[in-house]
Image (cartoon, rainbow, N blue to C red; front, top):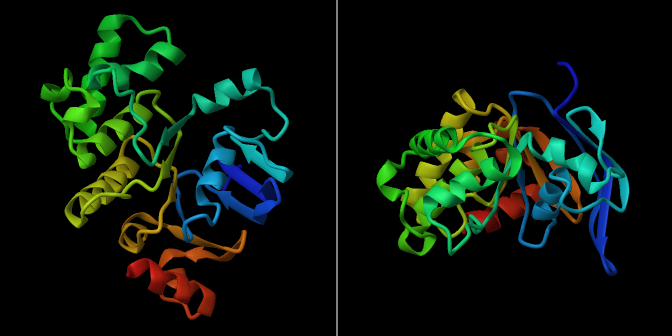
Length: 247
């Protein structure tokens, strides 16, 4: 299977006296989508932020693209971060910047592309997420929630990442838009970026996009395995979580 794109060994993370992750281990292969589920406050987003190098673990090891990242400096982390696209829960767009400037932002930060090429890549990434160039001049406040998510995904794609990290990509969306985002994530796998970690409590999304599903319960993976197996399995803690999530 080659070197995993991401490998976590006994990851631990606390905030003050609150132990959020108490020993999480997994390996993510290239071409795989891992969906991490769990209730709110279960540490899903913390896990994603650790993988992105935005925060550091208190214990355990974390290897990304073959490098242990838990002790790297900011400077050493940058080239690794450039190989990842991070889609934040709120889409985290810059309110004062147009769609064009939001999607161009990582290209200006991380590449030396000229303006013409940046403009072309912005339009191309928007078309990948199903948006026309008509949205370029709009501000985030002029977009619907579903469109904001799409722009957030287009922005994450602009650095041509090898792995995409999605934080609750369907949160706050109605069922129709949630389905569209799920289909979009599937479509990206077929073309633009074939490896992803998706953090969600949305069971339908998990069913649509996951190769494997992990369920975080009390700071550890209560289950980790093929999607169909975990989602229809008989583990009581997992079933209790899924029953609650489906409400």
